[in-house]
Amino acid sequence: MKPKKSILLLIILMIFAFISILIGISFGSVDIPIAQLGHAFLTCKSHSSLMCTIIFHLRLPRTLCAFTTGGLLALSGSLMQTLLKNPLADPYVLGISGGGAVASLIAILLGLGFGYLSFYSFVGCFLSMALVIAFVHQSRANSSSLRLLLTGVVVATGWSALISFILTISPDHNLRGMLFWLMGDLSYAHFSFWELGILLMGLLASLALAKQLNILSRGNWVAQSLGVNTKHLEFILYVISSLLTSVAVSLAGCIGFVGLIVPHMLRLLGSSDHRFVIPGSVLLGGALLTIADTVARSVIAPVQLPVGIVTALIGVPAFLILLKKG
Amino acid sequence: MTKLIVKNISVVIEKKFLIGDLNVEFSSGEIWGILGDNGIGKTSLLYALAGLQKPQKGQILIREDEPQPIFEKNIYDLTIKERARKIGLLFQETHFEFPNSVFDTVMGGRYPYQQHWFLESWQDIEIVKSTLKTMQLEKIFDRSVTQLSGGEKQRAALATLLVQDPDIFLLDEPTNHLDTKQRLRTLSLFQRLAKEHHKIVIMVLHETRLIRKFCDRLLKLDRNKGRQLASLKKIIK
Image (cartoon, rainbow over all chains, first blue to last red; front, side, top):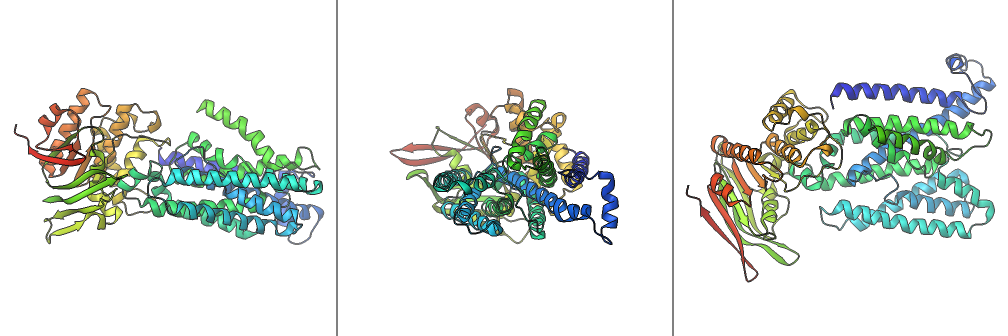
């Protein structure tokens, strides 16, 4: 694709992302007209009001949290798809989220406190990632994609059996919280800047690898014959995408679909060039999840839906339409 | 003058000797044809020569006596990028999983030379453009490689190899999926690269007619009682 077209598309995505954040702040159980947001940003420094509390203590952190999670998932998904040379891969395919889920469910079951849930799930994700690496590490250089995929899928299956087991033995009053976590839920998410920082670092690191990723997507043998050290690159890629997934899972549980379809939407829109897909994923993934979260908390307010349901309900038809047109 | 010196290599895959104690020297300007039955180890030999699969025994050396001083190194001691500048391989089959454009795909061949971490230089863009013309792909430069026909995919792979511009071209059935006219065009292109630009061309071909027409030397792989025999021949025209 011509560079001009990708730059134009990225600018449009940036505007879309900005609008999604405005929508996220403006809509909810109390609507704040977008026109008043500018006024609020200027006056809230000097005197506080209910509106300021809603904007700065509730909506803004929640919206940023949704945006960050969406960006993390979509970026991780696009890296996973290249790593596994499989357009069907998503951030969860290698079982990383399963480890996080088991750790969080155990924490809920034992009553270890919702406040530390993201810590437990991060530890769980990390353990799962280490487990997969340990198994794949001894493999020969070039069967590694398939081997990684198989190992990851089997580990994921193991985790999901454990998840079912925990759900079976859990008392009823814990089940609701567990199911929400499993479906992906932002209502308990706490935003902090280190998550955004990880997203930015992941973005920069993958941009630095973008050219090599373009070549890697043609297969390991071809990439090696063109001068890419596939063994190193795959390891780095696995670590980056796993870390991104772990942070996303620890923020909001297993929100499906964003990581799978956003990279495809971008490929259908423009090109598979990673220099476009990587920044595009962060912007589009963030924007879509922000909008989905706004819908999730306002459509039957004050009851909040798990955002994972909304991403699937909006994402499936949107993607099918795009697929038919593309 | 570049030489690729194969010293006593053996490639064993799953306890089967695919290549046993092979000795051969390839020099610049030569076009070699590799002939042999299916499964005898032709592709494995090319992978070993390309630096992709290290032989269990023996050495593969690359020697250049120009520019001075003489450069001689085991190809497995070169960095991956250095090796990609010296040796290029056309794979037997070309698969594309992701919808990159033809232009971007062919640009991949310039990777071993690129300095900038993010952008391509104007020279690289010019090289790709002119190579697309040579391979008659200039009209479909913007099309996704997943939508190409078999012959177009093969030409895109050939164009990638041409912009990679190695000293040693390894071609695994370069005529695959090409029509008669394209076959002759492609093979005469490599003939010109060997004769005028002093490249080494080593190709696996099944048609003895084409080998006789384009190659000067023949490496025939045969098997006798499980042991592999290689015979070297000069083709007299």
